[in-house]
Image 1: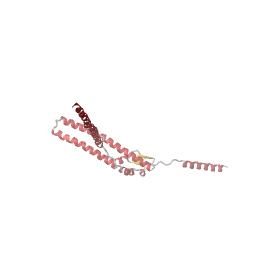
Image 2: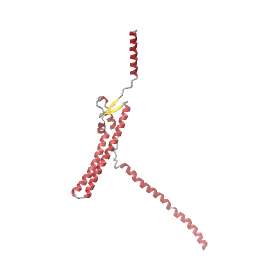
Image 3: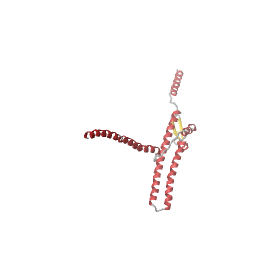
Image 4: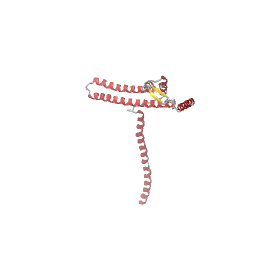
Length: 209
């Protein structure tokens, strides 16, 4: 009896373990990505660097021009104030442009990472800066870098949005044309109104004679 009871107990235990294994949650799939590499080595990241470098060269050229004139006239207070204004304004402009560019790149990167996670059935994607240790097979940086390189980003200066200028300039011109067109028809009925008046005056003169 005891042997049979022990066998039954082992059988029940095996069935319980088997049931737990069948209801176990699916394994979590994890990916790891080097965000710094995406922002630095991707084509949008390189384009952002070129955009900011071009702006810095433009501001530096303005500073150099004023400094050259100031070198010929060191006591010129107007040039001193102009140099200070260009320098301070340039720093503020560069800071604003950097924030704008970084924001655009981060938004693009976040969207691509999330799309890649969904498409490949990953539960989570971690940055290499927060992963203490990981299997290199989990690194998805190269795949995401390929996706980043397919993207085209047009960086526009936040301090001087050129594309909106033509539209703003056309609005007053169109309004002036509309006003001119509305005024012209009002001048034409005058001769037509004068003609009946002249015709009515002619019979009156004939009766007077």
